[in-house]
Image (tube, rainbow, N blue to C red; front, side):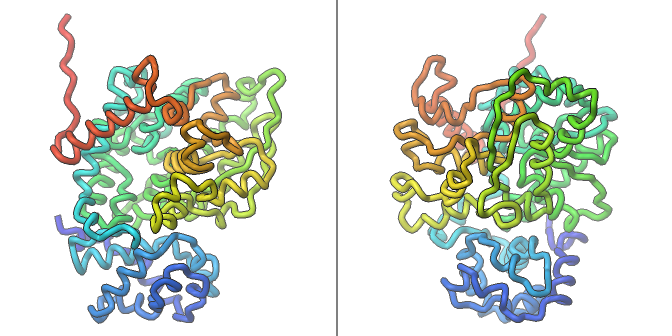
Length: 456
């Protein structure tokens, strides 16, 4: 499939808007990390790139600039014309992909030889196997009725990442059950090749990203609803901001799960679920996901917490649209990877969370939760060898406690318990599943094994 030949895959809306509104003043790059590294005035070349008029000698310079970006978002915050630059990075990567179909994005501190290993189809097969190994089909059977395609009020698209944090996954589904939601369930890269495609698009793997996205839209239609609820911030960004650029007549309503649940809990008949005797007062600070903020949602989680009894929010210095990107804080340290093990201040998010005087740091996304948990206070604290300055909890776990649904944070537990009884709760077991998924999915390009039906 030639992606560039399909209507709606050219970022045409964004490119026309950018060409029309940008006056190439360069203010957006005054505090740009990539500009400081490369000294390349990319703002002078983007219009030509978007109009297919770029001198090819600039392509390498654009690649270097792009790979030096640490997603600090200073360009977006400083535009004097108020341009929404949310889609700029993905649009540039798409243009580079059209010029060279082998193009893939990598941070500049990672050797380019690794680019040949970033294959969308192989990564998807590896994820599909991993999600099967981590949550076998027998453990999912409790929710089979929700997977059956029939008319529903809303479809919950789980995404791929939450399945790697199984306690969050099952807690959220149990919350839906407790609130008697009439929902359909579609799981990302579990038994079908469905995904929001955002990661593939971000890497420049547009053909496979579009294939996964179209499969997802087809699956949603089987439930006779246009309402899609998502938990993953990256899925929210992919379906809210990117998908309309790729698919004609795209009319799905994308809702972040915290927003949907907050509206339900406001209703009088549901408040009984929150009447917990002597609920502890909690002072919570929030790490806003970049993808949620870029997609215009910084209010959902705050709306949800306003419904919960005895919860107060203490904002960090950088919050909402100005939040730090935790992943790019990690990328910034790749000059000396040893820092990720020995340094305690890799993520300034933790410092600001402590300064907020909150007793809990709330994450909104599986990726953010993993990064904050593993690297937040240094790797030694993740292993349980040193104390954490502030505990990291996902909003699903916090809400679950108020609704009487409590599950062990398995990521935290596995990090500090390399070998345990039962073995399936250990860090070693988790690593073995990752290795199996890599061998079977990425190397072997095989889908998960189908379980044989038991004979009566």
